[in-house]
Amino acid sequence: MSSVTLKSITKSFKTVQAVKELSLDIQKGEFFTFLGPSGCGKTTTLRMIAGFYYPTTGSIFFGDREMTKVAPEKRNTGMVFQNYALFPHMTVFENVAFGLKVRKLASAEVKKRVEEALAKVRLDAFTKRQVSQLSGGQQQRVALARSLVIQPEILLLDEPLSNLDARLRDEMRTEILRLQRDYGITTIYVTHDQIEALSMSDRIAVFNAGECQQIGTPKEIYNEPANDFVASFIGETNLIPVQLEGREGGTLQFSWVEDNSKKLMAERPAAFSEEELLSVSIRPEAVEVFEEPPVNLQNVYEGTIELAQFTGASLNLFISLGGKVVQAMVLNTMAHPEPEPGDRVWVRLPEFRVRVVPRVMEPKEGRRIS
Ligand SMILES: Nc1ncnc2c1ncn2[C@@H]1O[C@H](COP(=O)(O)OP(=O)(O)OP(=O)(O)O)[C@@H](O)[C@H]1O
Image (tube, rainbow, N blue to C red; front, side):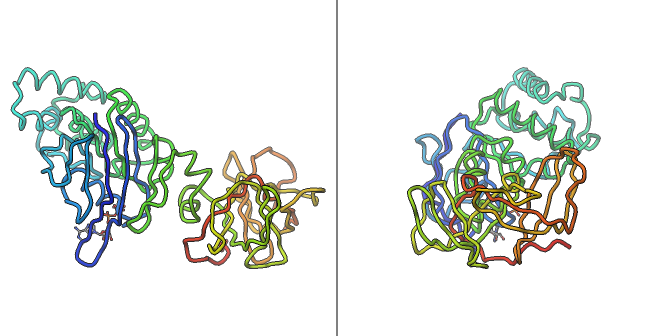
């Protein structure tokens, strides 16, 4: 088990700068996730940690050992890929034993370790099967056992669940976490799936276009996003571009950029400089919806329901407030009558639930419904 430190690493491929000035400290035994959209540099960073690529500039340490240009086979990392990369003509046992045989371990030791690893991933009944005769989930377990059996210091997982169906993904998520906790192994997990990232990680680094936008625990990333990109990439959110008008005590006073007759108060402390472009972010579950205009409340806007989506546990309401559509998630209380398109409602964006975030994305038009 080892900590991992990236010191200002960059990676360029001819004209593409895949990773820009990235610095990270991953703790011993931590489950750390790289999250971001396709092409943002997650895999390239993981490959630099594995040693398949060397950084163009910057350095990589495992504990206090510099690994920047050490060959992959000398790093003692275990890696699991999206496509499993198993040997289809070999049995489950042979696949898992492969790395140990390369390391020239005695055959009794190989047998013991492989059997232990297969028991851990609950495949002990399948040792003699050809991997081509296994399901996707079982193959992924073989890949996990193969990477763990070498007792790596660091486990690297590159979108390991993306080829599995939704139910199996759920199951394997729990399985991977259980194994990670059992072995206590430092784990770096690459995904573009925010649910995976939120539900599994100790900490997450959110990437965009080769840059790390925020590092934090799942709750920090979700509740206190660093900017509008992070807010909208993690979960659903409503973003309203705003202009600062004043401050009074701890309260910030804004007007909407798209309609400056609409005012908005925010009570959460927010770090930004006067010259930055700002939005407020508010999650659908934080938006309150009223059938009558509420009295003595702030940040209340009159609107019309455009769409009501029933999802079982909740109703997703898309509410037009003049040109802007805001999404609200209200719990299914089986109330009658239910909110319907065309209904006039009042929306409240509670001042203690809105987050002021710097605007780093291009402003978008209001969400289209159809
Ligand atoms: N070997 C390579 N040669 C040239 N460009 C590359 C190479 N590998 C990656 N890139 C480019 O670097 C950028 C980052 O790619 P990377 O694979 O790290 O992204 P990613 O976030 O892992 O994406 P995905 O989720 O799609 O795998 C992309 O623009 C990609 O096209």
